[in-house]
Length: 243
Image (cartoon, rainbow, N blue to C red; front, side):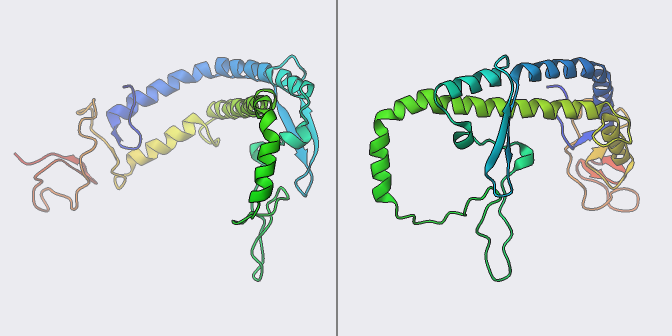
């Protein structure tokens, strides 16, 4: 398989990989345009929350988008997004609020109290299950199925935005955070560092990377010490066993 290595490789493999990824930079603009078109097709749904974590507003795209169609169907079937959906983006993560030296934390950032074991709710739970049983299939078909589709749609829209941002950053200069040239510059630096032995300079002698996983030597074999009895990686590069 092509370029199936991660952190352990040699110069021959790296140079081929570097040439390939640099050649692919020219495809990024077309990929971004495709992702932006897909984002417009999918749409989105966003909630705003107050400091106590209660939803105060939500926005959704018109029914021409996929998410808009799902949202319109959900409202038409009697769903109330303010109480039933309440999805959050990655910038609205729920976290545990800090306690104090004398009091353990007990509240989440969305206003919920941290639950404990032993709710002692068996009697009411059985009654709710019995009261809900005759509408369980209806809820699954008319509400829960749509809720799952809406949440997947929102997650997909967020993934599209993340990929657009990542691709845009990759086109930057070597000094820009997240750029391809920046990553390659750091890899070039590791290649020049003899103490970083995960990357070896094979001088073109091992183009297929057959020897890259040789173990790291416990000492440096050679003229200043005992000879090597096996393939080893050292600060001087790959050492082959003495013949």
